[in-house]
Image (cartoon, rainbow, N blue to C red; front, side):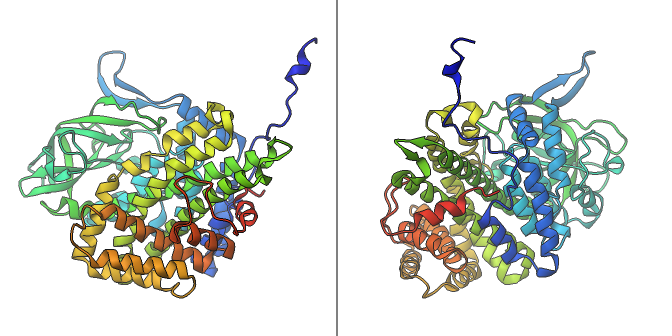
Length: 545
């Protein structure tokens, strides 16, 4: 046909599909190998490779795109006028959740190397579709909160750690698996949950209450149950609110509207009204924050893991594009300036992977020292890694040029998603102030972090100097609150540097220390100093099949 020759496609990269997201990620593979007992390592690698191949398939990637193109719809009433308060999701959403639950992404607490294998899987699965990771994260994180009440845990923990996705709303006793959500914040308080006004009135049956109030953010409102904070007679208390009561009737759970969000569009976030809603107390009255704190820590780690996954996918897309695209007579990946940009992005991604997997390993190892390490390192990592996600995603999209601004590339979805984890589970200032609180109240936390950092002492002079600078910050407590972000940034960078110096290839550690710790770096990506092995760094980040 005349004219069709103008539509011959050349100089475009092939689709990045049909590869294993786990085995293609060298930094992730080595981290999993480092922190997994040899007795279960083959099992873990095989499990993650199955998830990696599924995640890299064209079908599953299409599910992720479709779930975002067809966001959930609120159904307040049925055709006859009965109040139903349900959320209708595209079938792709249910397929994704089924895969995520089936891959064990809510079952870390009961398996050998459970947190490391689950963290690696979560990092992989985020790259497919981040929205469905919200209910997976909350379900996983609810377990330690429920364990404060052995009777509740006996009922709910087997359901939450199940590998069966049971989407039907029915009583827990008739479920093969369940998902757990949260409804914490209120419009007048936000992160200041102690300002909550939702009231909990005790009922005749011991441990049961009727809730009245309004929650500004209720995540994943079609979950089977929710952890909720409300004011009981004894103070702020944690409660479990099931969607369906034991007799099969619906609990009072009035969905007022769904939030119209920047990103994370596949996932529903709702405002919910409680009006005599039945609830079961979790923990003691007046100790709601203490009861829920372990759940918060786990979801904060997932925020960092999710951002690490988003960064990894952004870098993979940029490197893949540049490996196949030519301009000015050479492949983009071979051109010095683009190579500098790609290597810089790759450093950020690998550093995030290294730190988040180390935190997951601390959960597996347990013990007083590791718990103390987590108390300080989790909010620091959550602060820094989630902050770095947005600039990485934007720069990666720019590597694709105009193609990166087009929805079909997938980069716009990553860009929209990238600020989310910095906001959820306490924004940047909340994390920074939490670090200060840990420093002031739990000196063992700082000792544990310094022990971890000290394992790399003498390995790189720039890291050693950065550690001294951190000590200087810690020694000067005058006006420390106003400097909290500066302090937390330095702590996170030093933790990342210590891990990379010990475990990453020399070219990665050298470039990280020179740029992030030695100060030889500009304000934007692509400003790494001369003399570094950028070819090796980029090749390490390349999605090898």
